[in-house]
Length: 633
Figure 1 (tube, rainbow, N blue to C red):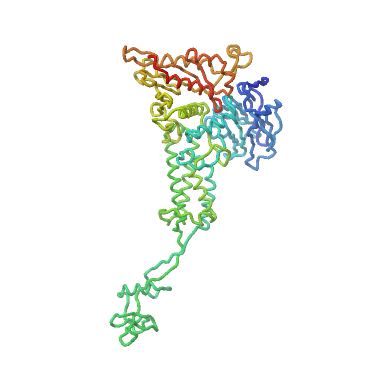
Figure 2 (spheres, rainbow, N blue to C red):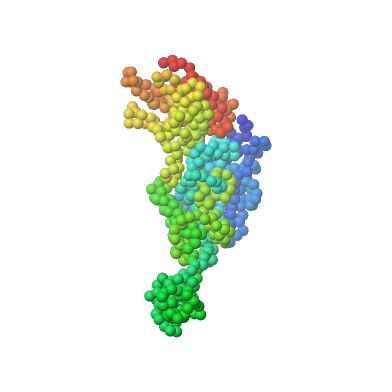
């Protein structure tokens, strides 16, 4: 592992300064993270230089002129002038607090701070008439985050920051972790109302979640409104023939169907010697003026005048397949918005009024669109016809594209849309379970539960915990039976003391064995970097899991018990308890005290990251190899 000289970690270092005629904005905090520096994270593999970070300052109002931006450079250790297009480097990290201060040029200015996350919005408060200040803490959430300054409720400045992880490499480990989670359980990568986001693009998915729908709808709603306004100016229509029964003197235009109607309804005729319609006395035929009857004789012809005639009119109708599609699409979107509002009201994020107001506003605007004149007379959609109008006509083309976007899911790659991510600690826990399942599936035959059980019933997809997440396997070589559970509750109400809920529980029963071997695996998104001169470095000489997490493994081994069938007494059921933690240097950790303790006493730790699973696979292979040996019991 490459070591870099420690940098100053003064929490009061100014990281960002923005000066304008309306206000001055400052952000201060620690520019470096001691764990990231100790592990040499976020650096180019070839040169060792720091990788670039996403940073942008966007002027949103013409009133904001003469912006001067200065950004902290970890390369030089000082504030430096920054302009659009210039590089930026990591200086904002997870689990760190950053003080934001905004000083108004005029106390009368109605300047406010905005962020999509309610907790961060509430942290920045007025301090007197001229100052807004507070502390921003992004927790374990990483990715891009937008800070917005508003004047009279309208955005005038947007600052885009990139929050970096402190325990794994952003470009290498994090991206691969997200891809592997996405391969196994697509929806678990997604959440919203978070502090950060990752750029995304659309992709085909058979199971779009409400979260994805909401995220896409927010980004395309302005396009939807613009397209509908354009269509309302020149809606698609068709010519239709309309027939009305009128008094004959009021009829302006007739066609052949008018004569056919008189033949079916002779009661609408009255005899008149000046009439223009001749009918044979024997009702053998009828002819108009100057015509001849079927018999070619006019001796018995009687002239008639119609009292009423069917008038033929050509009218414009907007009841077309294309407009029916628009109505169906808008009604479907409105229903999903109502579903989202219901989920928000019943969920834990219902306290934030911003999403509720946003959804209510979109619902009202869709209602206004549905009341447009050209949509009022459209009927229900009975078929989907992707006509040239939907593909090429102005407005219709844009609406069809929006419809396709709303049907699609999101892929975690660079692209059009953005999506907020789950807390990194939660995501790492998910990945550990999904990765362990994949490793077992490569070595065993899955006999029950083809994959992780995902709850998609609400707004926030998540792994199902407990017995419903159980996946069972059969080892191909030995025939041993295994099962993997995510976050089970041990013993339920029959527990002798307190409930135990480890992250992962792996059980193994040998062929013909009487008892199961139980292995506890706990995912901990934290580690001690073993800073030189510190107590951890003096004891273990290398980064590793926290001592308190190892003590939790001892607790699990003592607290998780089962009742003996023979004696009825409680006995320990856990064979081994292990911490899974994010660390990439497996070669170094192979000599760590807590790796050796795993073989000695069954309690220890294993590094577990994408591309760094060899020690964990070796441990798993040893357990499976032992399963093929005769049961000593």
